[in-house]
Structures are given as structure tokens and as C-alpha cells.
Length: 362
Image (tube, rainbow, N blue to C red; front, side, top):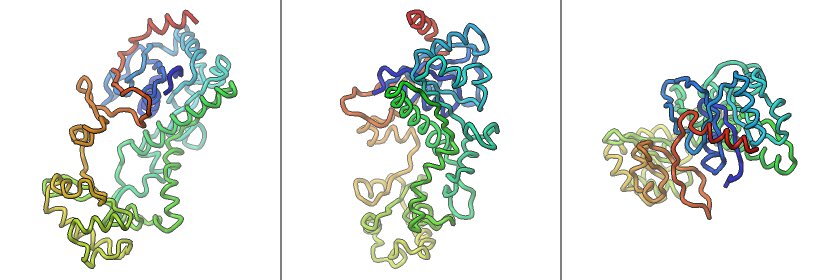
């Protein structure tokens, strides 16, 4: 889908590389500028899954000759992605002003937690900090308990990487129409707050009050996960009354007074206690078999490995493990496109000679 688009990525962590991986998954030629010497980070492998489908050139951006190579890369790129704190690229002499002087149509993507401006723009932070201050963590948990950390999905990926991808694509579309590039200020703080607008729309109608545990998505017995007899978990979210009716029918609770008022907040605590006991009587697989294919909106809580082995994945081919590395295929899917095949992540600097040869021809 993005054949013919070239993105330059300056090596970073988390959301920036994820955004570049997504663009590479969609067919862009992503050249990641790796440091010549790796900087080991706990939990991050030398060949990261997030580099799949990219080409790697190893440069020292503090070296004048390597910086000249970087500028030549900028000259023939549609977009650039960097994830440093504000001002770092400027100190290196390759900030937006310098890069646009080389390539006026360049889309300069900046990935940060707090944004390029503001009282915290230069302060350190991580995913959990950004989403806690943006309001996105507020409903993540039950009343009286600490909010549950959603493991980077809401912040780094949802509010950060994917908003950067949208910004890059919008910027490239505009640049192709006008010949003028732009700077994309993708802040996790902003993106994760924007993701809250669906809940804010429910709040308008009283469905998600500010008090935790009182909203239709964080309080009812029909919107949570329950432990099963084998220590597994089953998720329930039958929001619409017609689906709730199917749920109760399959459990034999359709005539039970505790479950009569689906949206009666006073009944929710008692109904939740009842369902805790009900779901503890069977295994996760037994419950899945009961609800499978129905409109009860019930599903097992699977680990990534279990998801890869599930019949759903056999049909969709969402998960695969090439070379033993479990990973999910790109999303969304497109008609008239060949089936996606995972591409290995490059070694640091693997394509340096190849890319230098290409630049020599320009």
C-alpha cells in the first residue's frame, strides 16, 4: 500500500520504532539509522521484532562524515521519525529547519511523551505517567483498587505510535499535493487523551460518570472478567440488552431477580458476587464451549501463545512464529494484496553498503 514511500527512522525505543514498523508492514521502505555501537536496554534484543521489514544503516550522528550521509538520506526521503527529547535533533544540526532546507517536502515526525512544548516537555517519563496525567488511566480498574497498568498498549502504542502513523500519512498526503512538508508533534499525552473521546461521549449521556465503578464500562457485572475453576479467566461484555438476554439464558439466570435490572447500578455488586461463584464452577474451556458462536459476548482470556494456538488464529492467521519469534501480522488487511509474510529484522548496519551505493547514484 505504501510502495514508493521512504521513511528514515532514527534509532529509538518503543513507540517510534513501532510506528516505523507499521509503515514498513504497509510497504514503505523504512531505513533505520542504527548507532554503530549498540546501547543495550533490558528486555530489548539486539535484533528487535520492531525492526522487521526495515533496512539498517549504522551511523554516528556526532561524526561529520556520517552526518553528511544522514543529510543525503533526508534529501531522498518522504518522512523522518525520531523520538529524542525536544531539542536533541536541533543540537545535532538535523532538526526540522535544517532538514526542510534540504528537503522542503519532508514530513518530520517527532515522538515524545509530553510533546514538543509545555511545562513537562523536557522531563523524563514513561507510558504510565503520560496516560495517568492525560486522564486515560482513570477508568482502568475497580473502585478502591489502584488503576491497572495496561502494559504500553494505551500509551506508547495507542496514544503514541499509531497517532504518529496517522500524522505521518496525513503529512505525506499533504506534501504530495503541495510540495511542502510539515512537523508532526505526536505526544503520548495528547493521543491517549484523544482516545478518551469515546468514553467522553458516553459521559455526556450519563453512561460513564467520573466516579469509578459507576459507568457502564467499568462497573456492571456484565462488563468484567471472572476466574474459572482451573485458574483461567473468562471475559463478559454483553452491553446491549438483546445480548445480555442471551447471556442470562445460557446461564439459566433469565428469571433471576438479581439480574433483572441490567442497568440498575444498585444491583451490580450483588450480581457480580453471584457471577463470581457461577464462573468458579467450570473450567475456562468449558465456559468457552458453552458460549462459543452465540451472541452472549463471552470469550476466554488467552495469553499470546494460547491465542496463536486457538482455532480463531487458524482461520485468520493473525499470529505466527517465524524463526521462533511470536508476532502478529499487520492490521488492517487490504483486498488485492498478497498474503503478508514476516520479514526478519536486520542486523545493525546490515544494509549500510547497499544504502550508500544507492545514495551514490542519486
